Length: 253
Image 1: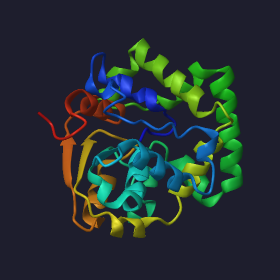
Image 2 (image 1 turned 30 degrees about the vertical axis):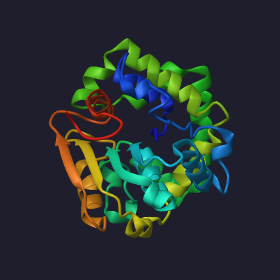
Image 3 (image 1 turned 90 degrees about the vertical axis):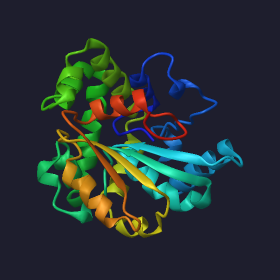
Image 4 (image 1 turned 60 degrees about the horizontal axis):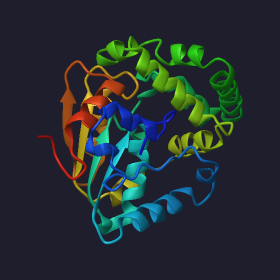
């Protein structure tokens, strides 16, 4: 489950030749499609995963807002899910006062408190992604920290972000708006039905999903979770670390 803004192209951070790029092993649904902006979006996504996996158990993997989606999918897929891996997961906002410390906190605050203004801002973002993607990338990377600061200096990474922004807002960002609106709502009780083993990888320099958010999520999950803090890493750098070291079926080497 990719982040937002984001796309399945995040998998290219794994590097060439990675098992993560094998479609026989990994399903990376594109949640930017217009079909994701429907009342049955999550149910349809769960059905897509179940149909792809067949009788085989799956590991749900979610990055950032994709982590929130993985947690919401887990109860729908139930015993089909063997484990859940989360990288810098966006947890329910009701778990704490996280917005002041989140780089995207103002956006989430608008989505929660002033939805019409949020919708207008999304339209502006869509125009930026279409006509001035470099400026939008620059704004996204304005306050990078830790390992993300190194990534931000790489032209290939900046180009990847530009591509993903274009994919996110290709249809005006309707699916993006809908998923964020769902995220800022009240879904904390969904965590009560997450019974699978959860492992979290979190950069200790992350200012998109601050470490206290992951710590609160660990405390809230019924069976807890294993939290791995990654020294010196931030948001995308934690994803890159994970994709380069974790096999689709299991644990770090």
